Amino acid sequence: MSAKTDRVAVVLNGNARQVTDQLIESFDRVVGRGDLFLSQNLDEAHGIALNIVEAGYPLVLTGGGDGTFVQMVTSITKEAKSRNQEPPRFGLLKLGTGNSLAWALGAGTSRRGVLADLARLRDDADYREFRLIEVQDLLTPFAGAGVDALGLKHFHQVRSVVRHLPWVGTHAMGAVSYAISIPMLTFPEIAFRPRMKVRIINLGADAHRLDRNGKPTGSPIARGDTIFEGPCIASLVSTIPYWGFGARVFPFAEDRPADRFCLRIVAAPPLQLAIHMHSVWKGTFRHDDLVDLYAEDVKLEFEEPAAIEIGGDPAGMTDSMRAHLHPDPVKLIEYSNA
Image (cartoon, rainbow, N blue to C red; front, side):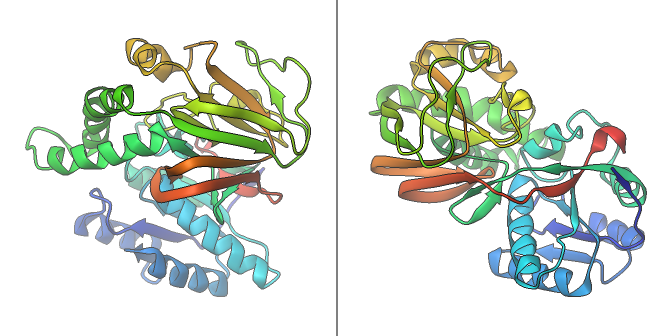
């Protein structure tokens, strides 16, 4: 579907390194004062959402990575629903780190500048309905517990050092930080720490285990049955293939049924993942202890409090995590046709 609009709200993460005073001035000239919002924290995000819904913007563009999108789409969608209003369409500007959803929408390989993207997305672009997962009251394209949350912790630690290096540009800072943190900090730590023990229960419609080619195999797992119980290094859910910077952590997401998300349980030895890091990144790594399923609603119960992440942002420690496919799709602008 295609749409054109003269009014667009742009929400930028004021904490993102790429959001400079010069960039803000440039955005002001393009979208006009009053249509540009800067969010520094969660409380400000809720206030911005209220203003956007009250003003009736038909299109909202977020810049600052997946976390900014998760905050805004959750707050705006819930506020609109409370008023019986139709939520606006959403689009993403490539600012911040990760930008997994931007990759899924075709922005990951775009070489246009962010202002050029803004001009194209606001003027005339196709959109599609997109299903998100509700995790701990947040709407997100992906979330997880275990090694991914640990990896984010290490990433932020390394980035705080890398950002002061003069030879690393702002656009390369995130990729360099991941390249250092995952093989040098994350994999060594998970190799020597006890594995996370989790029980995953199906709370929704039948879940289906997938074979190495992403095809359903075996008997369906019914509501109330245990999907998995035992040690692993990560349990992840997603409706998109990417985890960040083009890493295809969920290779079967593109072929998933519209009423299911991907559930990936990583019980493979950390050394195997480290040795095959390139194929893990490309989404071609296969292992008997790499378990993939399509599911609608699951609950993860941890033997001990586990670190989780939602939309690429650390979300603290918890004894359990519920993930269910949100019934109402959001409308997202697609870069591939913009």
